[in-house]
Image (cartoon, rainbow, N blue to C red; front, side):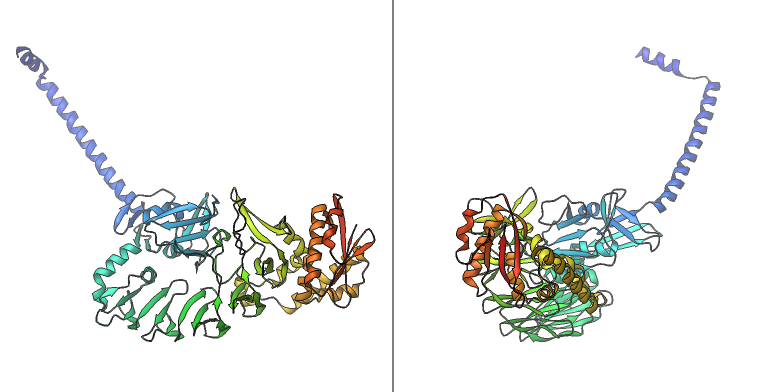
Length: 594
């Protein structure tokens, strides 16, 4: 204890030193105050420039490059990958249901399992689908394309609103971004629905998405009827007199069902677009503004002004994709954005998207289900990759229809299937037990039929149908026909010695002649032993089924019947195959193998 006292005494400073220390302390305090004041002022200044982001009323932290701002219009772009977890989504590189890490594509999945949305670099189209849906994508057009910056995909605030089902507002002066997610909006309007004269908001997820667009779908408890009101001013859009209302996000319209269970379409303004006359109505394609309608157990297609595109007389429109999920078909109603499949009396045919009948309902099925192949894992096939070919069947034989309506693969295949390995899908077809690469065959067949030369001028799809100014002119078609005729003339003169008049006739082949010739023409030129053997089998099958007989000449000997028996005589590694056609009918009548 004494030591402690002595130590305390020893540490006491004289008065002179005490005064000096006091001055130093005061100086330090003043400096500290000045520094603190400076920091406060600096924080205040910086605070006005630092971005503050709130989601559902709560401040959130974010990566530095989550948001980008445009100078010209003050819009904000959001990194799809970075914003997703902040608003209840998980983001993935690549395309939905495709094993890929393609950074030019991205899809998001709602954590509550309600919806998946796909984005594509440089595209103004986003695609939405429910997790349990198959090939029933809802395509939504946005104003600004998805863009890539430093390897990340960004979307405009408008695209974010529609893709992420959220409302976003950006205050440039205050440097704030406020986001309200759909679940947050649903909870708010559930609590405040009485303020709009209703008792209960719709529990349907699609109807709840109308809140993003300033519309509330709700019902009256006394009648059970549904109506629509504006969330902005409370004005009535659709009066509460319908048994059911369904919001169509892509078209910004409503399917309305009356007390007689008849269905129609109403605009977002409330005006009737398609009269309430049908048993069912659904959007076939929002870009084309086509609607699938059902009346008296028959289906048809209407345009937005209620004109018939396809008569209401078919048993089914659109294919069932349950067995063809590996095909990655975007729409069961419009294949390759070009053709509409229809079924009448259990037979299938095709219309183009302008309502022109391409193929009469004559095929037993669209697609090949490969249940008989058990020695390897194969995929069922409805469409052959990007080749714009649809697999069809009659009896037990399969072939392929092009989107132009040509039977480009003859109905002689036992199977058509695909195999996926390492993320790559390869398509095959089987002729008489021999397996061939379907893509290789189609490339040759298309070249022989002039497809590649005409594609740019004659292609009809959704994009140029929506933009009427891009329709192909008659002059363009005429030029293409002339060029193709000239090419055919030169080629045939060199190989077969046929004259140009004959080839001009061939260029005017009917679809039946084209289909007949296509099964042989793909084998022209230098061909392997296996290809020539397959050709002989094809000729044999054709001669048994068709009145137009084909003669095969091998080493100056000619054969018509049972030419498949000559397969074993084909022993060389390669052969040259040429063909002669009937100058009047255009049908192939002779195949020369050397």
